[in-house]
Length: 494
Ligand code: ADP
Ligand code: MG
Image (cartoon, helix red, strand yellow):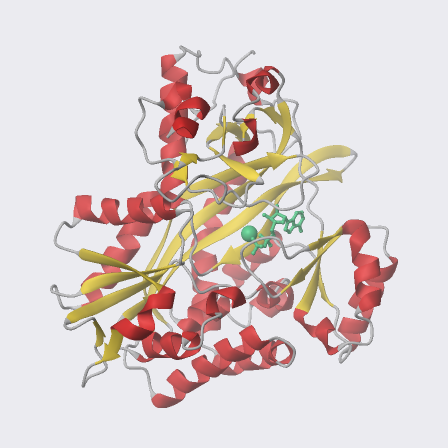
C-alpha cells in the first residue's frame, strides 16, 4: 500500500483499480499503480480511424483462418515439427474437429496492434500504420486502457490543463472495456442457459488480476445475473468433468457456459502433468470458448507472414478487406530451409543492413530478436530444423514523442520526472467476433489500448515493465504528414 501511495500521490482519489501485482512486492495483497504516461499520446486522426476501420476485416480474416483446418495444418505443421507447443495445439484442434464439435459457436476477443511507421514519399516525410501482431487469446488491458483514458481526463481537469490550443484535436472515447464485456455477454446468451457460469481461466499468480476483475465487474453492471468463477488453470484437473451431453461441470454442479481464457498462451503455462488433458476437456465441452482452440491458432504470427499480401489475403476475405489488410502489413519472409522463399528470407536476415525483427511462434513478450542480433542468431541455427518456426519482419520505424513515463522503477526517483522521456507508442484496437462455424454472428470493433515505451527499448509489454499505458489525443493530420506536433509537451505547452 505504501508503494501505491508514494507512486500515485496524484491519483489517490481516483479509485479505478489501475494496479498490478509485482513479483518484488511483499505479497499478493500489495499492489502498485500500473505504469502510465502523464499525458495522452498524440496520434494522427486519419491513421487511428484506419486502424479502427480495419478491425472488422481482421475479425473476418481470423474467423476464416480458424475454420480452414487444412490451411492451419499446412501452415503450422512445419513449426509443429520443431515446437511442442504448436504441435500440441494442432493435435487438440484436430481431435475436437474430428470428433465433431459439441459446441459449434466459437468466440474470440482480439486485439490487433499497430505502430506508426515513418517513410518518405515524394521527398516528404510521412507516417503510415503497420500491424505488429494480432492477439487472439488473453487479449488484455481493455480495462486499464479504458481507465487510463478516465485518469487522463481527471488529471487534465484537476490541474486545469487547458485543452490543447490546436484546432481539431480530440480525445476519442475508449469503449475497450464495454466491448470485451459485451463479447462475453453475447457468448453467454448464445449458450442459452441462464443458470450457467462464466469460467475465467487464470495463471497461478495473476499479476494483472485487476484488468480481469474489472471485466467481470463491467459484465456485472450490465447483467448482474451472469455469474463468474475464476479458477487457476493448474487447479482445473481436480475440478472439471464433462456431463452426459458434454456440459462442462465445475466442482459438483456448476455448469459452465463460457470459458474465458486469460492464460494458456505460452508453453510454460502447460508445465504440469495434466495441462494438455485439461485444455482438451475444455475444448471438447459444450461451453463456448473465448477463444476456441481454432481461433487461438488463427492468431499465430506465421499467418501474418503467409498472408501479408493482397493476393494471398483474397483467398480468405473479399477484395476490399484484403486491400485494407495488406495496406497495413509489413513485409515478411519465412526463414526455413525447406523452401526457396525460406532460403531467400534467411539470406535477407543474414545480409541485409535493413532493420528487421525475427520472431518465433510465441506470445507474451520477450521472445523477439532485433536488428544486429539477428545475424549471429540465424548463423547459430543455420543447420537446424528450428528455422521453420521463425518469421522475419521489417522493423517499424516509429516517430518519437515527448511525454513522461511513470514506471515502477521511478517510485523513489521523483527527481527524474523533471525531465521528459522520448517515447514510442503502440496502438491496439479491440475486436470481438462470434461465429457459428464460419458463419459470423457478431463482428464488433471498438476501443483501444495505447502503450508507450522508452525509445531504444525493444519489447513493449506493460505487465513485464517495459511500457506504460496512455490514452489518445488525436490531431488532424495533413495526409499523414509527419508533423512536429507529436509531442505531448507541445500540446500542453509545458
Ligand atoms: P508478443 O506476442 O511477444 O507481444 P509482438 O509481435 O507484439 O510479440 O512483439 C513484442 C514487441 O516488440 C512489440 O510490442 C513491439 O514493441 C516490438 N515489435 C514487434 N514487432 C516489431 C516490428 N516489426 N518493428 C518494431 N518493433 C516491433
Ligand atoms: Mg504484442
